Length: 142
Image 1: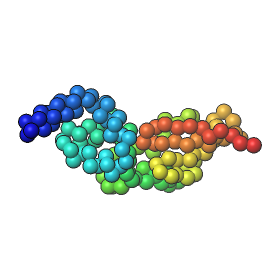
Image 2: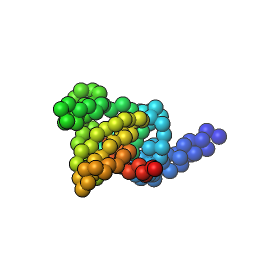
Image 3: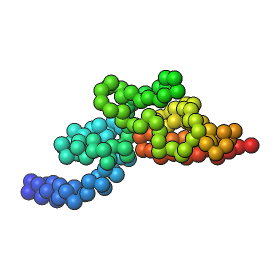
Image 4: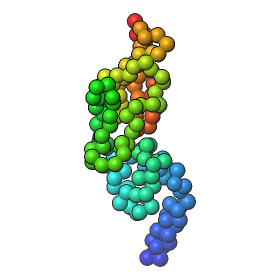
């Protein structure tokens, strides 16, 4: 009976070894932040996979830092106070705007007002995620 349980454990570990890094990262990215932190403790391979820049953007995020603005210049500061900003404070991935203002934020998403370069009287509201660099224009309302 002991033999059968050892054989089953070996078979399960063989199946785990067949998972590609991308597939494993996709599975882990669907877990809550606290569970993702626990996954980092499974092995050094999992820790490195979760922390790798190619996968980090898709993983659940904790508080990483703050945006702030001084005399029209936008900055991002890491919570740790060390290292390069984790996100680009210029938000250069957004469409070209004459002027861009951050109006509000919630759960890592930013609500921005974008004054169009082609028509300074017209503006768009954009919701973006600076960590993933995905964004969407809020549809106009009457």
